[in-house]
Length: 358
View 1 (tube, rainbow, N blue to C red):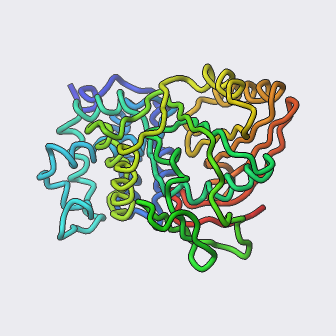
View 2: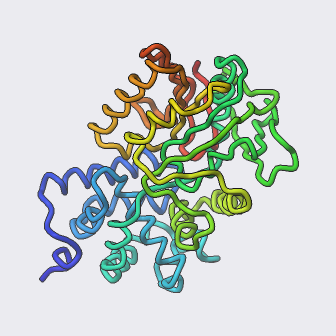
């Protein structure tokens, strides 16, 4: 029996081709200039049928390259921390071996631990909870509050993970010379560069929050060691600043956790939207969530929001990959069954910069 057969059931040539394309796209679109290690590993894995078969253990709607690399990091951050593969990860060693030499060790590690990796791939989902994305979302929250008559916001996050972006009003924000917002004594200050010639509508004061609720099929508990490890594993190895930021945000959530509910947004949202008190503006938001919805679920999501808008107005903010050169920040205004959509900005996937377009 071959190693591929030991790793997983056979996959079709069409599935193999799709997986290969996903890894190449991940390398060229997301890793270029950000993670030399992941870029090189993804390009090599795109040509390796055994690793593609292993990655296929993750659900098809999941970003499978991210899943495979995070699953490997779970083991490296845990019991396998002394494996030779760790010497290629900048956050796991002092003397880093060049990334171009990493693939043989990576491949051997995956084949050696394929059973444990396959279990992680089958049971986890990509639930990256990068708090710095709040710095990109903040100008959209300010617009939503302004268009709602400056009323407080009823926040509802779809795909909330551990809720780190659900507590954005507890952070402080620094936009270079263009402004600082929030409590200077906040436990975490998020720095975001402004690109381009237009300045985002950075508020003088943070919008008021009337209530908050996070929805996720698999919400993560910041106080749970395994969940916290998974979130840490989703941080890329070169991004040590992200790891430190995640640690501080998790501590803030553990100290005062926001309400999270396990459920399917397609089932829960209509009652949640209609049930919010009328004294504030309902504001749904999501970041890098819809890419994990199958096409049918995205269509159902749009339809149910349109129907909900027949009963009360609300706002929606989305930070998702689109057709543009970078993730797109969009604002949707729902009223009387109709929706107005506006592209606000292009953003760094992890919140490092924002380029205002509106």
